[in-house]
Length: 241
Ligand SMILES: Cc1ncc(COP(=O)(O)O)c(C=O)c1O
Image (cartoon, rainbow, N blue to C red; front, side, top):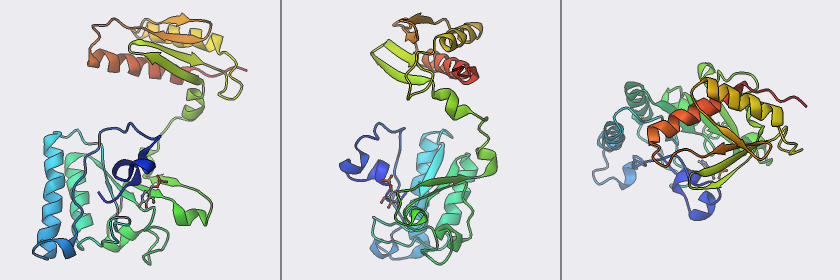
């Protein structure tokens, strides 16, 4: 909710980042423009709209993004209890409550996070602009238990140099490092072998490319299962220079 540049802004801001995971937008509680100018009714209307989205997707909503004060939308301050209501809805449907503090954070509203003005603690916070003091910098801050990434997860995926293809003829080229582009031949063998052990048969193409060439009758569920196995196999492989 609010004016997230990436998913709800002008095409220039979205360009090069699309496609996004599916996103739905709910109206921001804009009391001044709301027909009855009643805070609680306005707040409930927006919460109901979010509730409808939750119901429509039957518990399959990963997160809600909310700007504690809508910035590009017109510096709109939501009704006092709105953030609390939104967080409660998230808790009810098992979604993460994420706040976009890109404009409002870093003491702009008197508190480090604008959402603290509403007595709500978010699960994830996005910050930028002021924290860099002119340097383009962004930060994602999250609850400790959401950040339980295994050590090295990022490096392991460093080995994916290139993913290319048309339709169901896809090549995933493995390299020692993205910079050197040195073929990760041994690593590829280990990925294929681990995938095979877990029920996903893959062949190589060239020296260091995973050949993703599934049967054309592949279902979406099978594709997702295969991707999961491939991801786990990639995670296990450590690059040896
Ligand atoms: C509140 C808010 N969120 C997110 C963004 C997006 O920043 P970026 O385009 O760097 O992703 C902006 C940009 O102005 C913003 O004002």
